[in-house]
Amino acid sequence: MTSPGRQGKRRLRLLLALLLGSSVAAAFLRMAAPGMAQARKGDPAKGKAHYQALCAACHGTTGRGDGPAAAALDPKPRNHADGATMNKLSDEHLVTVIKNGGAAVGKSPLMPPWRDSLSDTQVRDVIAYLRALAVPHFKEK
Ligand code: HEC
Image 1: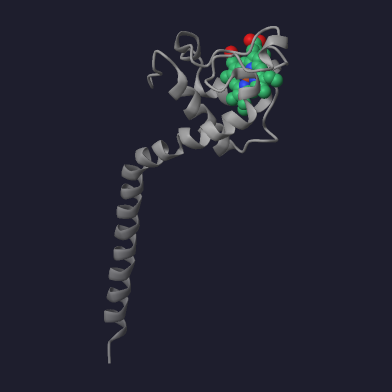
Image 2: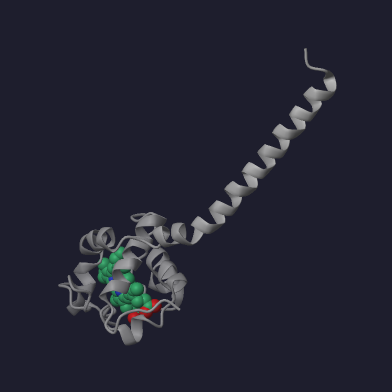
């Protein structure tokens, strides 16, 4: 038979173990978070597939702004391989222009909005591909 006092102590120890355990878990998550943010950055290989399907008609299969539809467009589609221009555009800007179209950032409405065709994850994948196209190469700030 355990006395009520002993049981109370055991409960206290259990509570302490739980508290300690959860703070260890929280510290672990904080440590793992940068790696998880990296994973959220987007997958350029997946982005490439979306790009070829949705963007290449205007921007070209290699992103140089020379797709079959480009001849008819004024202004011309952006050359995504031109790092000098593209590297100045932040990820936030790219998310906005890809999801909401050129008009949303004061550019040509001939750059269509893609929010109905691409999920947020897919937009990030496309941006990862855009970053990979840029010469000179895009450097994270
Ligand atoms: C119908 C043709 C067309 C298609 C398809 C198209 N774009 Fe564009 N895009 C344009 C044009 C035109 C511009 C230039 C807008 C300007 O300079 O005013 C542009 C500009 C851009 C820019 C530069 C925006 C800036 O602020 O400078 C990005 C980034 C971009 N497009 C991404 C994409 C992506 C990603 C896709 C596919 C998901 C795509 N575009 C599909 C026509 C197109």
